[in-house]
Amino acid sequence: MSETSAPAKIAAPLVRKTWSDDVLHRRSGARVAPLALGFLILVAIAMLSAACGAVAIPVSAIVQILLAKSPLNELVNIVPSWPASYETVILQIRLPRVLLAGLVGASLAVSGATYQALFRNPLADPYLIGVASGASLGAVLALVLPLPLPLYSMGVVQIAAFLAALLTIAMVYALAKVGRSTPVTTLLLAGVALGALASAGTSLLMYLNGDKLHSTYAWLLGGLALSSWPQVFTIFPYSALGLAVMILYARPLNVMQLNEEQAALLGINVERLKLILVAAATLATAAAVSVSGLIGFIGLIVPHAVRLIWGPDYRFLLPMSVIAGAAFLIGTDSLARIALAPSEIPVGAITAFCGAPFFLYLLRQKKRAVF
Image (cartoon, rainbow, N blue to C red; front, side, top):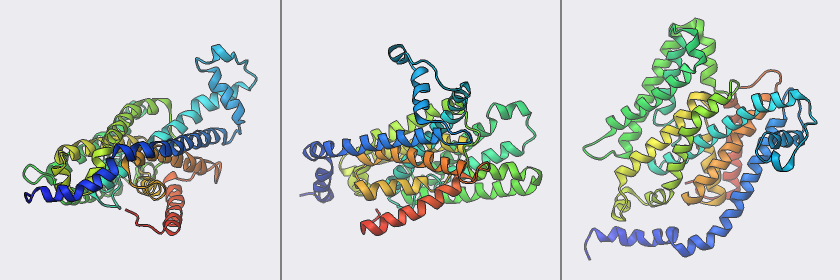
């Protein structure tokens, strides 16, 4: 027996245990039910979120409005019996906010799960490798520059945040390369270093532009108060593409839980996999951060909560993180809107207050290893 075949022989039972078609078939039925239940809970949370606000709207009226505006209305032929203002509130204000919160929450949660798998680090999240710090620097730079006002209405802040996030991860990847490989350790170190540099640049810009401190600080706190349909349509392609790529690569992510050497021996092109998944996770994160600012904790708490309840198999963990991340941010954003109405609490503070106790509760109840 050759020396190089030994790790593969050691890893093979683990892979068979995770990948076996028999196991997959046995578990598939058990996984459909939680996914279906989770999706129904997500829809219920979205409906309740759309119903709550300064003007309380019955859920039944929301369902009727949505059906009346859909192609199904030709079949059900709903006659409007609700005030006209309900349509404006639902279709122009609350529905885009709910959808945007769902996209942002799903993007941050799945990106966090992917980073944790790639870096084999339970503390990895979309903010660890400098993506969020780079986006912050880009957004603050756009806010403090004397740009023409029409550019702000065209989303120049979001565009700057998105481009800066992509530029940051490109620099991190270039700096982390050692020969033809990109070790996880150097990737993390480069991310932390460039993230710190970007944060320092953000702080310096805020210090030098005190007159714009309020607007820059409000963006950094994160929020969805300015949600609109153009924002939903703008980030949807990027979030959808990033999420689809990460979910399609769930099987190789399972193999990566062994280690890079064993994964390579089992036929995984590790460097190509890391490049594709880092790019996909960064794309989804950059899209989310560009419209919501810095909303922390979702990429850390949601994947761990899903993992603690349903296990570490990424074929299930990633789709469930889409549902859980979307539901979590829609729910917390609703709480941020109504807790101190008419004032609005930064949703980033709510995610931290809700996420940390929930995570500690799960950790205490399950009595299992977190990662």
